[in-house]
Amino acid sequence: MKRALLLAAALCATPASAQQTLQPAGKPYTIVETGQKFDLLWDALHAVGDRTVTLRFDVGRYRECGVQTSGNVTFLAAVPGKVIFESKLCEGKAGLVLRGRSSKVDGFIFTNYRADDGNGAGIRLEKGHLTVANSWFRDSDEGILAANDPKGTIAIDRSTFTHLGRCDRDLACAHSIYLNFYDKVTITNSRFAEGDGGHYIKIRARVVDIRNNVIDDSAGRRSNYLIDLPAGSTGRIAGNWMVQGPRKENPGTIIAVAAESRDHPTDGLTIEGNTVKMAPGAPRGPAFVRDWSGGRIVIGANALDSGIVRFARQ
Image (cartoon, rainbow, N blue to C red; front, side):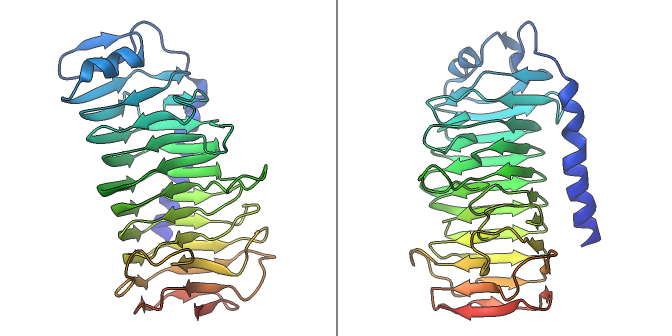
């Protein structure tokens, strides 16, 4: 687990220098396959059509937003961690609104997204497959919010999520990531910390693969579950380092399964090889896994601090 902690530190440290970047000049958007350059992201995405392309972004701080409606698009930062998307929402939703066939996002920082409905996000996925890597989501209502595509897949790797989520203004809570009914979601080698409300990971996918992440709630506030599978799921939660924090709105559960519905079977969901710590001042007695499904969940060997209940059935 030392390796995971070193990785988490690197994810936070690497993009910090991006604060020194400047507003991009000239034509900052390039379709790599053709060499075409564009002044506006809207024009670049319109030119993509239904093709498969890589759209490269020059170093800089962007106050634009984009909507992908077709094709397979890779959004690529020219230098990882030095392309910042900030504040501006498309359709009142997100910095990038994605509903093409597939999307890949690599090397970006998304920051300061707030919406009137409390769901401002760096990325709003409405349809298609999504891959995110080497990116940092911070200081927003939500990092990634996804609608429903039961045939779609989502993969998140080597990314960081900080100061996300909220439970205020008499609105439904937002979460660091909130992914609805997809076929499979994979989250690996990523870091979640300093949540400002809601859950860190909330997923309604049929299958999950959540491995080798750091979920650190020690500096969180008004947080709820570290992992929430509200509709049930199968798959694996393994090799993660988790810290239960002291300032929680709901301190009784670390991983919740089928707390809202039983849309998916949970038989065979395997939870093993995780290390779970209690931060100083964290209320004693939370359930590591609390299950509402009644399924045959497999809880293997996990390193749990004293004061954590291994399993609770609702």
